[in-house]
Length: 303
Length: 243
Image (cartoon, rainbow over all chains, first blue to last red; front, side):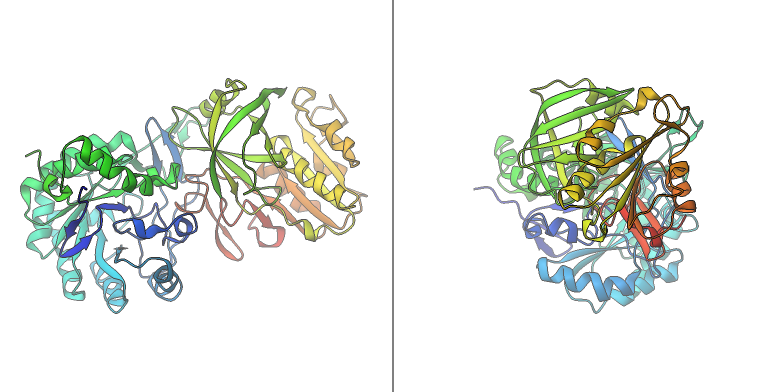
């Protein structure tokens, strides 16, 4: 009997599988399909202070072994999430959820964190400083160690909960940014958000996405994720939530060997709504295959 | 929504670049005409959303146009091969609103879902008038099938090579109807909206990520707020669409 439990920033998870923000909504669509309590947790849709419509369509393009999206943080705003989404979520999900928050100023990040502070059922704040699809916020905070530290400090003051800073791969020195977040009080690091990318329509001779650029995700990015998790593991002492192209239980093991304590599943949920559940179910067999008794013993095992 | 493996019973050309595929498998999740399925095509990352033309207890019929690599792959698949489908996606048309004499307007590959709609409306005793628009004779399909249901069919082609010459909107003057159902390319829907009277439902198209409401990839703005074409649509009330 293998043991899939891991502990993320002091909170124990039955397993390390966490559907990634933006691929799982606020859980409702998936709870209608299966009991989502089989998951370790999930990270809800990136939430901002005000409602956001997001970018014009098309927002989606396919690539070899992956996809581009430029949704642009569409969400109903933190108050609607508190009033409408979280009460419904609590009826179907009985584990701590990861609250993914985003902002367009340092103060906005802190304010969203503050509004969520009294809400029960939240285990961690995942602070998105890496969205490539919005202007004037998002990725710009995650591309500079000083700005990343500013956001971390502001959110730190606004919440007692563990904060996990979600980093962008679109940087030259990911280790420096991760270190800056740790020094500013982060409890964990999650990575990678999507890679800034573009596709061009040959007939129209214009970018496929209305926003021009989008974020690349899916199996195509997994080796980049593994490399960056590996680098960040050597740079910080706080836990890492790894993500990027995870589709199978073997992928989970690979990211954990690179240094991840928990692993998020993103684009795979969009092509197979049961993907995260299947990965949870496949984990014990994959562990047996590779002689793993306690999953937590794998963390950083490749170093 | 349901996920299952389906066996291809038939997959053959129907018109220029247009194929009809009949699949065998569970259809219990399909509730309304105008809903769609999302097909996993081996070797392609994202599924391909295709509207349901018709279905019964054991089979479903899709009519699709080859527009890119994925639908190209699909057109080369043979009977006996299997496909992974998500079925019962989207809202579909509301038959209750039709009144006794509904008007159905379809353009190109917007025509297929109207067939399943027409079959159910005529079975319920409604007198359907169907206006079908295509570019050219080579693109025309399903005219006789609609007629066999007992519907009055008006065929329009852009160049007059089949039916009457002109756009679907040119068939509308003088037609009397109680409700309007439309599916086709956005320019056609806009043109219909500009000249048609009365209430109706229009089916919209958008590039999708998941097809079941999770990714927000296909959201459009409406008078009643943002709507996901895949989950809150693809059928919208005429009055809520921002043209």
